[in-house]
Image 1: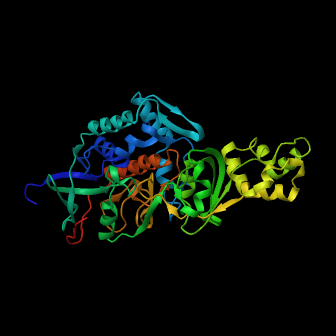
Image 2 (image 1 turned 60 degrees about the vertical axis):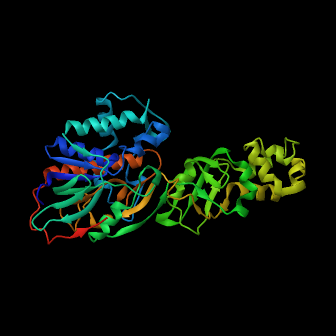
Length: 418
């Protein structure tokens, strides 16, 4: 490639994982090119956490992630921990605070975190081309790779794919990384929306549509055995279905056509409480229920009960109280679907980790090719876990690129047009 620029590493994708990986690799002495098709850097960081970026979670562990190969994330997470990233944030003098359940946020703005990552890249002498589209990618006949970009041809010993998933297409999400992986012979676990609101058909949801905007703490569960998920979080009713942290969490475990189960009064024995109330209260059943649940929810739940809801509590049979309590604490319903990638915070599925090294993120098929971050089949819970995976996988990859020797004996050129 006459006149081609030459780098040790080309990182494709300037999101959380790509920026972090590029900065570390550059500071380890590698010549790094970071390239992204979007005009703005790290848009997902910018909009996350209400503009303050939930950048990690103190309680991060392998159990907080879903994958077809659950043990894969263990190594990277152990070698770059939340404590390590917190130390970096503190070195950059970025004020932060902890919310519930170990979630850490910037005090002021997610822009502070983006600036941190850009400073780390500058410290490593990283060259950044943005906006710049990557076209053909070839595995060179001798060694390394050749890439065609909008800014000319590039030679690189290693290529890191940090292109993210399909969630939030309005900020530039694409399937580039999946197509690149497939064309190099990698399997891809079918991508699907995760951390996403659930929707219901209009007829099913009609009795609850008026509850839009109502929020309360619930226990939610779905699935069985190793595939089961259960969370105690806040639920939000919407015009089309359910959202809020509880539903975003369970959406990653939910499979189409299967039900979810909700306990709208977690921590209570509602049947026993209503039976006991019969001995001291003369309220109508509906009014008594409204002392234990949000009033709007109690009203909606009592609507199908007709005259029973207005009957004085002492006149209501225990079996009717038990049935009412069960309907609230074992509410089972089947979503019609999700709100899709448009509303999904992350993408589940991705490059099959069985074909990657858990130590280095390098392809077992193509030496010198790496996959990190959301493009990989590793999906974290809501609460900063996905950013910690970006930092951990990016760190593992950058360290490996710096330590590895030059790959030799690559097969004949393969032209890819992702």
